[in-house]
Length: 160
Image 1 (cartoon, rainbow, N blue to C red):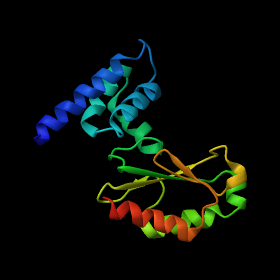
Image 2 (cartoon, rainbow, N blue to C red):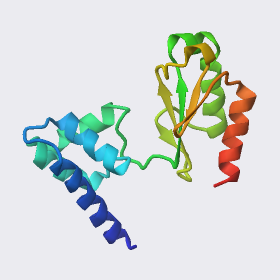
Image 3 (cartoon, helix red, strand yellow):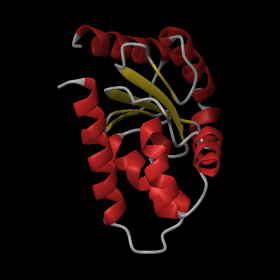
Image 4 (cartoon, one colour):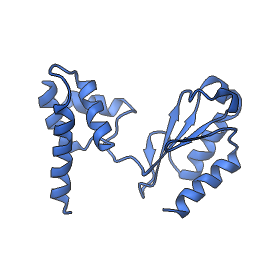
């Protein structure tokens, strides 16, 4: 697929996601729909978002740039979420987050250059008794230690 074909496919998918929403949906709701459909907000889709929401383009750019839930870059193939809820933090989640950031050389809401992993904070998976908890894609891993987390990250790299 050429770059132009990929852009056209993203634009079309964004249009489909926006068409599913009711008339009068707000900018945040529209942006969420595109983020969910594509995994990120391609900058070339901003004019479509602005037109649909009936706002100026700078307003769309500002929303995306100031809200860490939105991203102009594709998310990683694997999403690593570290619970930073009260109980998990009391059980060492802060140290886990630091270890993950050092191991991946990124901060929260960033993706590795190879687009393999994206690191995100999360606030309570509802498994407090097993904390600290880490979710990798859809699997929650409880009683996480720094060494176990680093091993899981290495396993993801090896299977890439």
